[in-house]
Length: 467
Image (tube, rainbow, N blue to C red; front, top):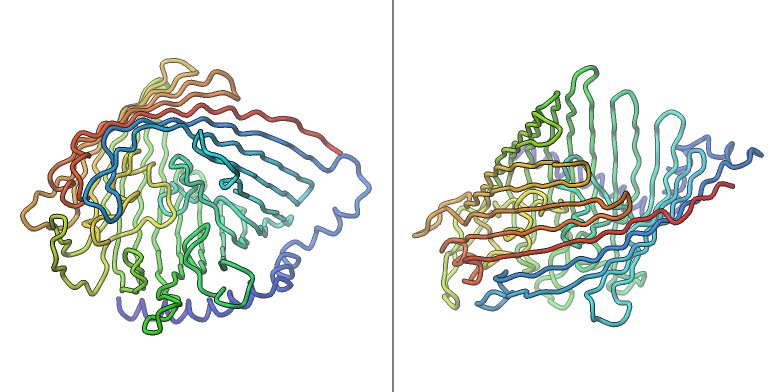
C-alpha cells in the first residue's frame, strides 16, 4: 500500500506541474480545444439558415424551513434552534447551440426573505462546449458537475449549496464508453501579491484533477464507473512564519456500479482516500487513510409503489475524544481516518437533515458513520409522489464509555406536480438522538429534533428562437 501511494504521489506531482502550466497559459488551453474539435471552422462558415438556437428559461423557487432542535454552534456548548425562515431563489437560464457548439449560462440570486442588497447574486454556471464528429469534446467554464449517484461529485442543490466548479473538461463518448478528464486551478485574485494562497472561494481547493471512466455493458443492464481525483488543499498561514502556506494533496479513487433489470435495481460503490488532508481548518496537514462502501437495492413490483434497502459505511478515526464542554486533554492523532464525501450531494444519502457531514464533530475528528436504511415510495396517481425512509445511524469506531448508536431518523416526503412547470415538494423529518450524539455534537437540543420544509418551484421556458 505504501509503494502504491508513493507511486501515485510521484505521478500526480508530474501531472500537477503540467496542469499548472496549462492553466497559467490560456493560449495552451485554447489550442487543446481547437485540436480536439477540428470541424468547428466548417460549421462557422456555412451559409445554411437557422442553425443557431437561443433559449431563455427561468427557475424560481420559494423554500421554507421550520426546525425545533438543531445543530451545534461552532465554538459554543449549545445547539442552535434554527427556528424558521423563507428563502427565495431565482435563476435566469440562457442556452445557445449550433452544430457542435453549445453554451450555457445560469445567473442566480438566493437570499433569505427580508434581507437587502445583492450579496447573493452570482454566476452559478457559465460554460461553452465543443464536440467533434468522432465523439471527442472540450468544455470550459463554471460547471455544475455530477457523476454517477452524486456521492462524491454532485450539485448538492437540495442543501442550497449549489456547488459548481471552474474547470476545463475534455473527454470522449461513444460505443458504450465515456471518459472525462477534469482540471481546475483556483485563485482568490488576479494580483501577484499573496494571490497564490487560496483557502476561501467557490470550492475550497487550490487545484483539482479528476479522471472518470464509465462503461455500459452491451445487451446487459450493467453500468460500471471508475473515478480518480487528486485534490490540492492549502495548509499554513501567510501571516505565520513558522507555518507558511503550502499545498497538500489527497487522492480519492474507487468505483460505482448500477445494475437494473425489470423490477430490481442494485447500486454499489467503494472509495478510498489517501495522501494528506487538513483537519478542522487548523491549517496543519495530516496523513489520511480512509474508505467507504455502500450497497442499495430498489424493488419496484408495480408502477405505483416500491421499496429500498441499503447500507453505508464511512470509516472513522481510531479514537475520538468524548468530552464534556471545557474538558482539556486530547489524544495525538498521527493519521486521519475519517472519510470525507468531498463534493457530493450528502442529503441524498445520510438523511435529509444531514447531522453528520453538514457540521463537524468536536475537535474536527469523526467517529465515522454506519447508515442502514429502509424506505417505501409510491405514486398514487400521475402527479403525486410519496416516500418515507427510516435511517438507523451509528458510529463506525469504538467510543469509550458510550454505545455506538447515534440515533434514528425518519424522512417523510411528498411531491405534487400541478403542471410541467409548477411543482410543490414538502417533507418532515423526525430525529431521535442518543447520548452518544449529544456528547459528540456537544448539544442536547437534538434529542427530539423536528424539521419541516417545503419547496415551491416554477420553472418555465420563456422563449426559444432559431436564426
